[in-house]
Length: 268
Length: 370
Image: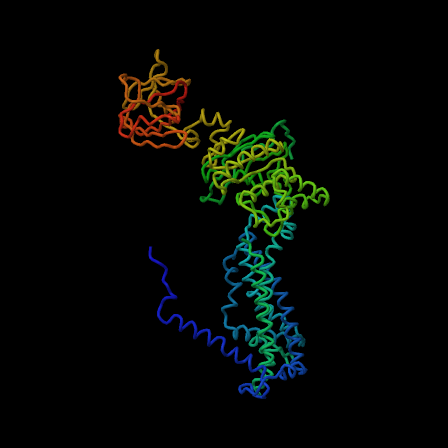
């Protein structure tokens, strides 16, 4: 038998790998460092200070945008996770139905559609509805975010269900658990890490979204990313870096959360 | 629900058929099977993979519903009752223990679903832990215990609610040889202690013979024979059973008129041979002589060539308690497997290439229609 192709032993492998990491993380590191800049430039270092964090925290627009972002992300992630859980259960545990294969593909397609396309489509829909109803509230953004977050929530949940031994649910049924009880006492507790991962992924995706939000939002509905985008268009101060730093820490914390939950509840 | 109570019968299958697919692609996993399984019996479904034994078990457990036919439990038709309403529990092949629960919670799960009181569940779980000797592990997660221990937890969990019937799906196949032997004994004594009907599925004929009160041998969705291990081994109903249960030799021949030496068979290429059998053979009938390797005697070629099988030794293998020989018959009609029990001081006197004669032990050969 031929050995596996030893990719790590190829000439230049280490150089490419190291360069990739540098290009990925160096800008991030610079942006984070500059968040602590005492100067007013987002590019030139003027000594250490927490003033931009303070400035961001006292900026009413930043606070309003943060609240909206978190609210939007929380509501959309809950809705998307609920829908994704039901979809994953139907696709892995339910009987095969007409159009099963089609549905299987269609659920994940939004991941591959360019975001700008989805954004334009959602813009058309929400603008039309706004025209008909006159309603200009947050619901458009909630619906839009829920819609594009579903596939993100769906993938980890389905993955978890596929690795879960179906005979566990059968065993529960064998031991006098009605279908509902089998779901409540066996399926759901075992599925929970997947649901949590799905929720966090949906939450982060919503929190991070610029393109779709920018298209769908109405005046005054700025989320943190769209607010930052607006700021960057004018003058770039390290305040943007400070906000980005906080964002970064929250995202990393959530990712660590997923990892920790998965480690603790490995099925095998 | 039909009230058809037959004392002593736990499970009665009446013309049960299970087919999968539809149209031309229909596959019958179980074909019109009728079978009684008695109360307090250790019953084994034995057969090669794909014979329908697992489907039969799943039909009894309620994980599949029969296409046609009825399944009675204590006279009640349960063919369409879902598993969680059947007082029948299963020990799954991979045990299917709940990984998010402790050993004790696993064992108590069935009773919890039956809404028994906390005290009753606790008492019963303790009792079951004692029964399978795992008291010291009650608080452990199931991933932290060994395969043999998991097996015992699965058993305790299935027995905790005192089902009328316990189903065991190839439950020992994942264990290593020593542990499997141990668990065989343990299962047998658990069955005796609880008085619950055990239905055991296996492809391992030795396991089936060791543990069962009765065995059903299955092939291609049909029952070939039902009987005690003794009957199935010593009086196989057909060539399939003879071949599947234990090792055996087949010799083809044609019946002759019996004479003073007993039943005479014209063996292919050898001529008339006296076959010591209790079966009667019609003259001219095509027959198969079935004889177990341990019922043949091997000795260096003697001077009475008539009415005996002769051949040359092809292989000699020492297997501990016995030595196995394969003998190529001089008529070219194939190989005979002969098994001889060893004694400690005996040196093998027969070697590869030796000319030998093979004799039947009286009344051991069986004659099946050819």
